[in-house]
Image 1 (spheres, rainbow, N blue to C red):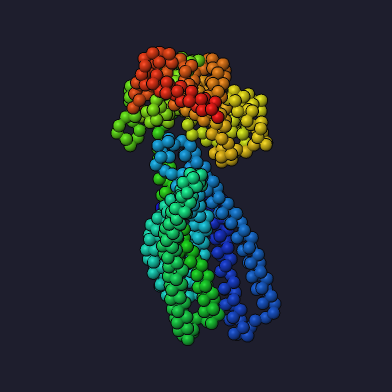
Image 2: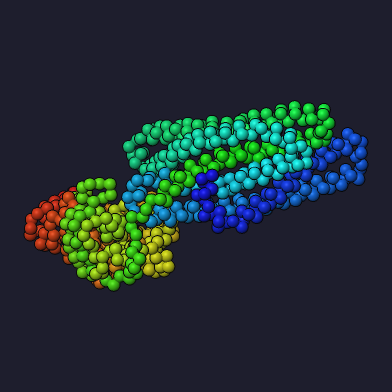
Length: 586
């Protein structure tokens, strides 16, 4: 019953619906007592030759009325109870989804996408059944069973009732043992399904890579192994599940044998009529469903409890980024100052950033360069408040980042990551994602700024073209430019381009950067890049190596220092010259 306690908050919200539904169930339970009683009366009337036509018609009308009321009542309780359990699954899915949106990247490093999807689908469905079929079987087993037993004892013979119920404790013991086993095995089955779900998601997302390396057969074999594991674990659940009905049937069979044997003895003694015995046997038949429901209830509760434990484990994960009670809702300017002493990722011991200090004023551009893995992207993640666990301070608009509401801060920052994610919707809707009310004219203007307008109008449906999942129908350069347009349409105080021009040619890159300089004269821009031509115009360039600033200055100043920046710049210039030469030869 632990799961009922865990869902107590929901039952309080929907108490009127459940009370009304259970009341109708109780009414139906009472109405079900009438047919066996009158069947017994008919049998006794026939045996005593006192049955009349008018009395038979009267009883037939009575039973017909009971059937009609029962039909209507069953419709009503289904609407009340099953309608409520659908509300529960909606609330839980919404709560889980909202929880996911608040979690930091570290959370998604520990939980894979397929696993999270399994929690939001299979597990919540299992919990939903507790609030629907679970409540039904609980109420029905107790109400129907209780009223039937009371009727058997009061209207027929209490001694025979007690004797007939003697095998029932065996059912309780058996259900308890099987229930614990089912809980553990269902938990394992759900975990296996999570792994399979993650495998499917990962394989579909990486299908191009799989085909490129010719690993289709190996991927299918791996998938096959995981499906076998899922089937094996679900078969273990099914084996336990399959023991419920036979166990209950044995207990019911024992009750019938005892009833017929003792009932026949009472008839011989004259303390029980044949009609009463027939009514008693019919009542015993009515007890079969409550007994089955009792076993079914244990099954549902154990499945729901295992799934609730899995979902609750996710919901208990704490948010890493929490707004202060008096967090500011307005950013006055885009001045930026870094005074970072050290930052270490959660669950790691070595710092990835140390002694990062610089400042830029509103309207200026910062260039960040360095080798792969030097810490450039990590530095940008701190600006977005993906992590707050660092030593030192980062100021934006004259205030620490933690002084602002997270929502306000991120709305003021237009971020274009290395891995551009586009939604499976139209080009225009992808651009206006952060600003849904943007007009078509505004969408076209930012598309022109990033030199993608000409590409879009050549598409079959223009700005209404559906880009496909993750922008699969677009080239790398088109995806990058759409992602930049999506950030620019917000007119952010701070624009961050994290190697966001790597897939465009040098001429297009220069055009885009020139447009940005003209349009963002009063707002700050940060460009992280491997291609140094992207940061030549920056007011300040920092070279990051092993999480520290190795060099800093303007483009000309860094060339004069003749360090890493100058060396890489010369190499890249040489590569460009060679490419031009190769093109001329062709």
